Image 1 (cartoon, rainbow, N blue to C red):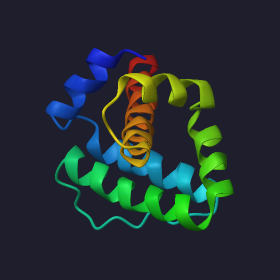
Image 2 (image 1 turned 180 degrees about the horizontal axis):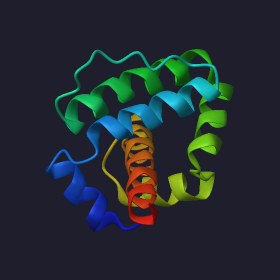
Image 3 (image 1 turned 135 degrees about the horizontal axis):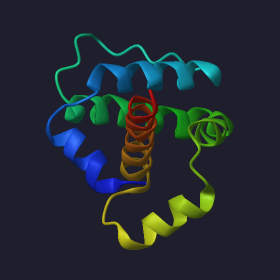
Length: 113
C-alpha cells in the first residue's frame, strides 16, 4: 500500500464520500448493512463507526468478518504482521486496516481513470 498517500488523504479528508461508498458496497456484499449517518465529516467518524460494526461482527458473526476481510482484500498474514507492531487492539487495528484498504482502492481507481 502507498501508506503515505493514504495517510495524507485521511488528514485532508480527501475521498471521504467515495470511501464510505466503497465500504457500503463491500459490507453489503457479505450481507452487512453499513448504515452510517450522513454526511460523514471526517475519517475519524468513519473509523469509529467501522470499529463499532467490526466489534459487533466479531462478537456475533465471526465468519462474516472473515468474509469481509477476504472481500476487502486483507489477508490473515497482513493482519498478523500488523498486530505484531501495533499497540491497537485487534478490533481497532482491523477497523483501521479495512478503512485504509478501502481508501486505497478509491485512490487507485482515481489514478487509473
